[in-house]
Amino acid sequence: MLTILLGLGLAPSVQAERLRDLATFAGVRDNALVGYGLVVGLDGTGDQTMQAPFTSQSLTNMLSQLGITVPSGTNMQLRNVAAVMVTADLPPFSQPGQRLDVVVSSVGNARSLRGGTLLMTPLKGADGDTYAIAQGNLLVGGVGAEAGGSSVQVNQQAGGRISGGAMVEREVPLDLGANGGVLDLQLKEADFGTAQRVVSAINNEFGWSVAAAQDGRTIQLRGPDNANDRVNFMARVENLDVTPMEASAKVVINSRTGAVVLNSAVTLHRAAVAHGNLSIVIDTAFQVSQPAPFGEGETVVVPDSDISVQQEEGALRLVEGRADLVDVVNALNALGATPADLMSILEALKAAGSLRADLEII
Image 1 (tube, rainbow, N blue to C red):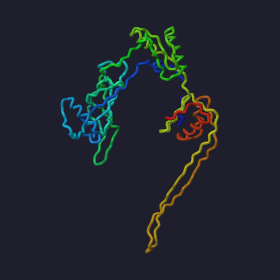
Image 2: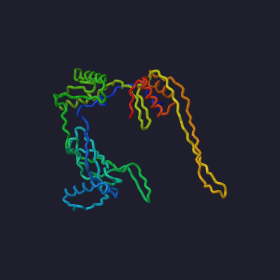
Image 3: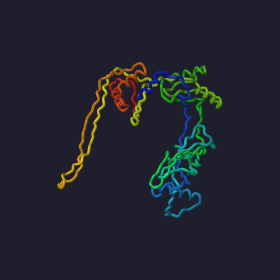
Image 4: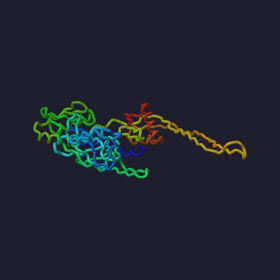
């Protein structure tokens, strides 16, 4: 499995990147929006209101706002309505009238939202204020059919998207450079070495001390007071080429899929590893015991079980890779271990102090 990583050790470990890929300006970010609404027009695949009473309550409240009164105690057997949650991301600098894509997901027991229409749904931010209104026809990628007790389904049908389905009604206040033109540039990965290189690159670009590092993540910039000049200043900063520091050594193990990923900084100190597999095989054969003719016995089935234990030979192997990733991969591949065994070996190497990397299990 690790042979696919051999090519990584042949390429340069660190290359220059644009600063916009390494850092972002404080405050320039998306904001999450969420709302609760109703999807109508379904072809009998909506919520079963006996198990999802909130759908009927929501419809009753909506109808009352439209001047329609539903008599109390009415048992509405709705099949074409589904309660949904609507989510969207509000990009920075969004203005009223702009369109956003929304994701619509069923919260009840609707079998499908295919062909449905989302009714007007307010989308609120974390502060409880409404920033957008969503409405429109859903696009559902899944499809399914059933008949005679058999069914088939392709992809998922309980969610869909509406391209441009929400309209921004309110902007998020953001005043860049309000503190005398001071801007904060925040690295996506905190590193003191990278912060120092970013400060040097910015100051060299402008020819004077524009930037100063506050810590391993935040860099303070003294930008222009004029808004147009500030935009030009930020564009020049984002397009600078900076070579980040090499990432710290790390091994990532996905315990659910068995995937093992190593970066180029991983090294192995000298260690000896014994690896072998133990397998237990239980083979059961059933035989029939037949009594003699005219006997008083009964025919019975007698199980005959054969249990065998096999253990592969596991000789000690020397593993070491202190030069580059290729040596580490070759050393681990020499063990001939499966991905599951490899995860256990890496954990043991880490505990023994031979694996010089952080071990992260996801």
